[in-house]
Amino acid sequence: MNKPAVIKKLIARLAFMVLVVVMGGCATQHAGNGIPSQVTVPMEVDGNRPYIHVTFQRPDGSKRSARFLIDTGGGGFILTETLAHDLGLTWTNVFHGDGVDYGNRVAVPPRAFLGKMPLALDVDSEHVLVAIGLDRLMPRASGGRRDGIFPGYVLARYHVVFDYPHRTFTLATPGRLKPKGNPMPMPVSKGISFPRTEITVDGNTYGVLLDTGASFTMVSEELLKAWGAKHPEWPRYPGAYGEAATLGGQTLETMFLPDAKWGPYSLGKFGVTSQKKGTFEDWMSASMTSPIAGSLAGNVLKHYRLELDYKNQTLYVSKRDPVP
Image 1 (spheres, rainbow, N blue to C red):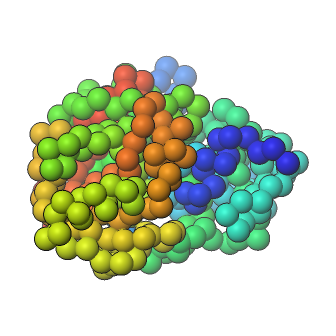
Image 2: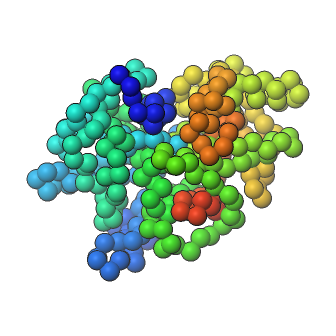
């Protein structure tokens, strides 16, 4: 069976703020039709990954809250079969990938809300996927269940703020927010909407996927080996070492870099892991606007406030102190 290319891309990836403690978030600046044009909700950071609670409406009108990973590097809106059945969803196609059966071509997309703001999930039924036989998605979060994945193709319809230090997440219609932070180019791929950024290591600049869904920064095995050959003093370990163990997947090695530059910011010492040759150079690069060598993930991102202006393909980054 020929699976859509976008599905093949996504399978391998499988309340602090006082202003937002009103059960499910604070909506502001309503549009003329009464629908909120902006909402801010609490965001959990668990294992370096960001989570929010999405509210669904069942066919009988009752509400159901579910915990979703927000994944800028995710290609599909994925729900567990348990959640899908509870919402009365039906699908007409099943395919197998990465050890899991998925249902797609959902007859009627689920009605979902962030706070009181309705989410646009009706873009393409191929992108709404049901993980068959699962009541939670892997890898398992240490602090709670994962009912689904909130992906890039949905995020790309909005202006998005990940405030990791203050543990809040904001979704707004394009043009609603006045951007804050240091601007950087953020080319966004068509369709799957993967955002690209760049980091500089040892004087060389590399394109990377901005990946909130991964807990630990990754690079190609070829790149990690090259760094190791040039800098044998950089700490290097086989497999997933230390905090990298939360990443899951096929991690080959872990290395700790003394520093890197991301726009105007010095990242200081941080870890990267390697994936087999071709994962980024070929497979993931095909879904980007231009080639990448890896992905910048949660172990770095958790220290920053990130504002993704998808419409204008600009990333705004700022460093701020966490809420005590």
